[in-house]
Length: 216
Image (cartoon, rainbow, N blue to C red):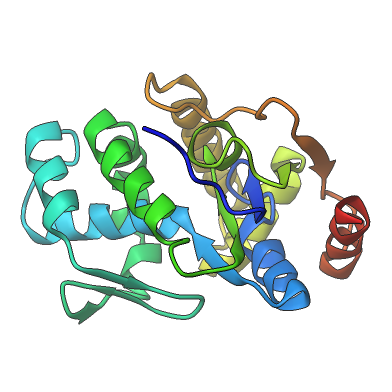
């Protein structure tokens, strides 16, 4: 496949809790660009698979669901096959299933195609996930890899989920990190040519300003 990559694409990768979504949204607003959370796309597939009663590890069934799924996704809402799944895709059931779904090669190929097509008609965008700089847009204008200490990432995720058991959240993040880094299809890596930013002790405005300076 020939990749037609827009000049103004900022690719953001990194593990759970590193600040990708928050920083991606803030950066897109600062640059007046559209924003795409590709992790939400995999969560949408997991939601649709669970709703259909499919095993998240069943590649044939889940791939078919991914191909046929109608998905509307923006910075605020996620609508799957006409149903508002904005809250459900962040729930514990989907969170437990999404790593298995994201490891399926045929599902990844379908969603990568959708992610590239998302740029059609756009002048560029801020796209975040786990394989954006390495697979989806390897020729992006700027490739970033965000990280943070495991403890900080767990604190952030616990705050988002309203989960009081920090140790449980940290253990779950560790499980997802291992699954994302060790999966055969498009594992989580810092892409060649990417800039690594540790967000542990930085505010959102500070990180956004750093990225803007990198673009300049």
